[in-house]
Structures are given as C-alpha cells and as structure tokens.
Image 1 (cartoon, helix red, strand yellow):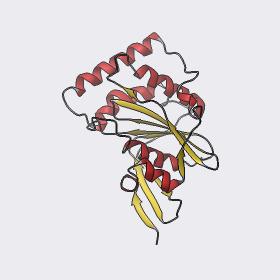
Image 2: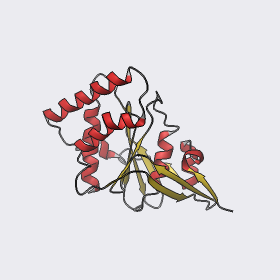
Image 3: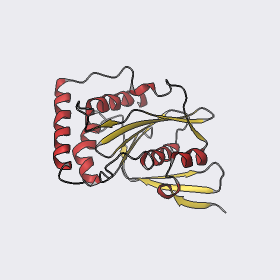
Image 4: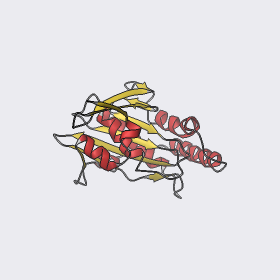
Length: 210
C-alpha cells in the first residue's frame, strides 16, 4: 500500500533524502562551479542598496525573531527584484504544490513551497527567522526534495535557501544518477556585506536558466 506523507515529516535529514530518491553528493569540485565563477559585477548603486538592506534587517532582528513575511519583505523580495526575477522571461508562483514518489514506490511525498518558483528551475525556500542557526538538518533536505519534483529533471535545477540571516545555494542534476552540491553559506553577521555575493550568484543563475 502506497503511503502519502508530508515532505516536512518524511524528509528531515540528508541521509533520508538520499535514500528515498537515490541521491548522492557530487564528488567533482567543479559540479557546482556556477556560484563561484564568472559572476557579474554590481553597480555602486546596487551595492549601496544592499548595504541598506543589511542595516535594516539587523536593526529589526536585534529586537527579536522576525516572521517569514517580514524576512521576505525586508530581504528576500528586494534581492529577487534586484536580480531581475520579477520581469520577463521569469514567472513567479507562490504556494506551489509538489508531489514526488520515493524510489521504492511505497511512498508519495507531498508538500507546498511557501516561497517562490522561478521558471521551475530556480526554487526559493524561505525559512522562519526564529531558527537562529542555519539548520542543514531541516532546510537543505527539504529543499532537495522539492527540487526533485522539478518538471524538467534532465536540466540542472538550482535552489536558494534563506532565513534572512543565512543564505545558501543548491544544485541538483540528474545524469542517470541524481547528484547535488551546496555553495558556501553566507551570513548577515560577517563583517563584509555578503549580500553582494548573494546577489551576484542570483544574477548568474538567472542568466543560466533563461
């Protein structure tokens, strides 16, 4: 009998998502080169705006945890707008339902991405900022599970996970064997403004998925 489970309940660790979907980490260091190489330059105006976004976030965050909607309003939405994802050829969808079947055919996992899907090749997952540490044990396995549900599995799929304080990119590719890799994580609390790196990577991925 096939079970239907919520992704958030069935996939909580990387080991689980690897086992359920025949997924493995890439060993080739060049597998996810996109977040490091040939990144676009930003204008002085863009860098200035990113500095303001960081200041705003840290100002509000120091007074307590922020709700997902607040994180989206202050940080995520401006980043996506600056990266060009609100304009053609990109299409944005929210509350996207995803259904995927485990490799053993005994489980169907369902979930709903409460963030955004861009061109169905860049998946954005926004976490509640009340999680004061970036938990790869929660965020990354679920993001990978959602990405497996991409309707175009033969092309690279990219993910962007953030809780407003920490940012990480993911890549998933199915070449007979599903493989994945992560970028470094970028923190709001680093001395330099890592939003500069985040925006550069978003723009680069936008160029790749058009």
